[in-house]
Amino acid sequence: MLMVFAEVAMVEAELVGGGLGCPSCVGGVLAPWGFARRRSIRLRGDATVSLRPRRSKCRACTRTHVLLPDLCLLRRQYEAAVIGAVIEARAAGCCGYRRIAGELGVPVRTVRRWLGRFLGNAEAIRSLFTRWAFALDPELAPIVPAGGLFEDALEAIGVAVRAWVLRLGHDRAVWSVVALLSGGLLLATRGDLFPVVA
Image 1 (tube, one colour):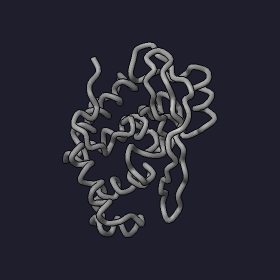
Image 2 (cartoon, helix red, strand yellow):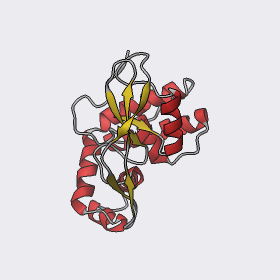
Image 3 (cartoon, helix red, strand yellow):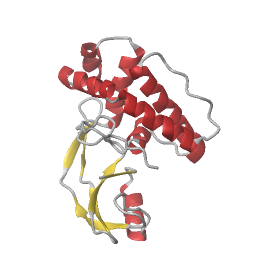
Image 4 (cartoon, helix red, strand yellow):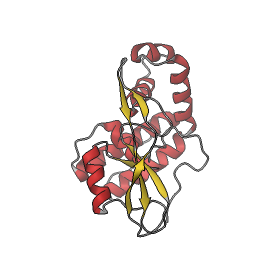
């Protein structure tokens, strides 16, 4: 799986032109290789969008990869922006998960699971986004702790996204950038979420 921008035409052009590197090998380039199964992503309110993610195959190692658009996270039925709104509401401390669920139109159990997964991954998230922030802006001042694991992770996300925008100038939605920088794994359940590459 590889996170890509949601613009289909851009992804197609990069695939055909050899602009996407293989995440499995060094020097490999991805080429078009069909499509993954169709899936629906829930947006705010009752709206949904139907996706059929592109599949690709490395020309060197022949491994295949699904190209997941940056509007969603791995194995989540909701748009990354909806998940982000839940995380931001929890960090603001304005209300409990039941009220957050009611205001965003998401099942209570789902909101509770997202928040629990984010808190469970908080240290790995903080570490990853801190590394991204300094990679994007080497002259960045130290990131000041925000008062807890959850808040520190969200602070690191904010600093990294700001560094992304200042460095690359992309005017993208915050949670789309988060999806890209996390490789779609923000709420993943596996052990070594974001390995440090030497």
